[in-house]
Amino acid sequence: MKRMPSALSRILNWGFRRYVRRFIRRNFNAVRCAGKSYTEQLPTESVICFLNHPSWWDPMTVVLMTDLLFPSRRFYAPMDAEALQHYPILERLGFFPVTRDSVAGAKEFLNSSQEVLKSPDSILWITPTGSFHDVRNPAPFLSGLSHLVDNKFKGSILTMAIEYTFWNERCPELLVEFASPLNCSMLPIDREQRTLVLQESLAATQKSLAQRAIARDATAFSTLALGRAGVGGIYQSFQRMMVWIRGQRFQERHSPEPIPVQMVRPGERT
Image 1 (cartoon, rainbow, N blue to C red):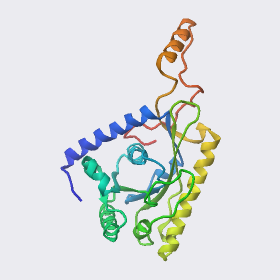
Image 2 (image 1 turned 120 degrees about the vertical axis):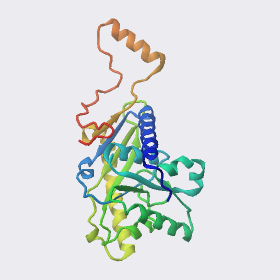
Image 3 (image 1 turned 60 degrees about the vertical axis):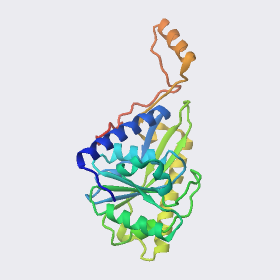
Image 4 (image 1 turned 90 degrees about the horizontal axis):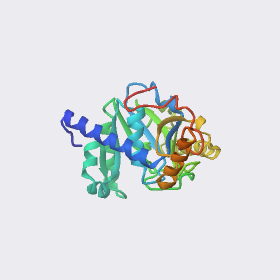
């Protein structure tokens, strides 16, 4: 994997993470996280976080989660080699190429992943299904993840589910949920059985997140960031004027937002 001079690398990562924060806030009403406590006080070893893969937004989401919840860790994630060719700057930011649907590609993934996991401050994000699938339907895993994590792996393994859903605002909610870190020493020795355990962990986390999403209760999450709300345009400008005339305070959200006492600012931990 290519390395950059540390100063330039920090500048590019800072700029890219800032861009992602602003881009997501322009397109989502809020970013909310359940199970945030599981991301805190992890051992000082590398981390693998595996997740479902429902949409185009997923790479942006994992960059944002790294920025907000793991600011001291170095971001890494595999990406289809052909797609990465269109965005070569991403390789400088922690994405590394993997050739899909080939034995050589599988070896490439394992070699690159094992290399980045040697750094105790790394976090590796993986979508083990290898392709898009419905947000609430579990999908079978490829074997790559179970090759990386066994009872000899010394790092931490986190499960994260993602869901993008509309509640009461014109922009959707970005919802994530983390499960309790998996105990590597308790994983089955047999690789196929290990894959099933990992699949079940993600399926259970997706189910839990789906129930929270259906309940539409923002207080069940830690609010990590707030984005756009309200109708916008001429209609909202008219609303603002009428509220101002009445001497009232304008409320752009259709329903009051719970006080985000757990909101995370970039680079901080709560």
